[in-house]
Length: 274
Image 1 (cartoon, rainbow, N blue to C red):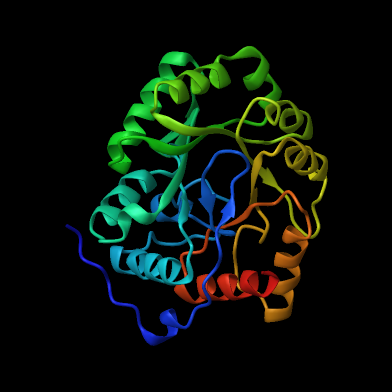
Image 2 (cartoon, helix red, strand yellow):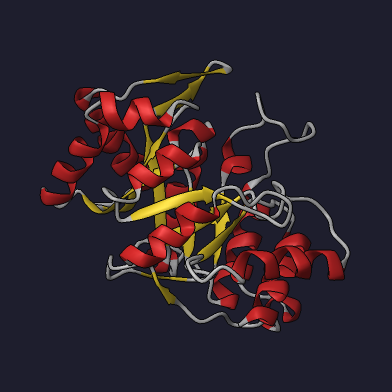
């Protein structure tokens, strides 16, 4: 049995967020998704140089998330050792089983570079590794982690068919696609349960994908909604969050900060919308 880290008074005062249906999956997630790329990878990213956070910092983030009703984590094999760390940290917590996890398959990151494998064999092996790393009997949501030519991945590889089989086998609860292009998103939304779509105040080209997802009752997690993290003035942050949730099809906003203070700010800004 894991031990529960104590919340300090500031964490306990973080507003609690209500869960929202993730399309027709039967899964309810918080409007904030805690991204974990910076938990396991600090190479080959567009962010400024940083050291990977220690376990105490990550437990502090999880404390804040749990205290605010954030129940959804996003990870991937492409995030270095993120999956292993998520699995270990959640196993150390009495509330670890309360967190839902999205992971991905198709891209792997090792020795400083990404490799891609969208074969049925490669995707199945990736899912099996994720199950072990995350210490789960089934994965809540698994998305295709595509390269830029996502149309090729959808039309020319067995990725989505493989995911559908894994869902039938009970290893995956919901299938998804992290989209790169509008054309890919419009095709993927017809065949997946959930999409991860780029959208923010100054980049709204993928709005048709989100609108189509809403028409079909598909879940949408917004990526890059806060321009990949950072420190904002309160007014600026609220404008960014408002721009995301003005879109009816947006279910949850992924935030990838490793700063407890920034995470509190993000949650406060989202709580103002709901």
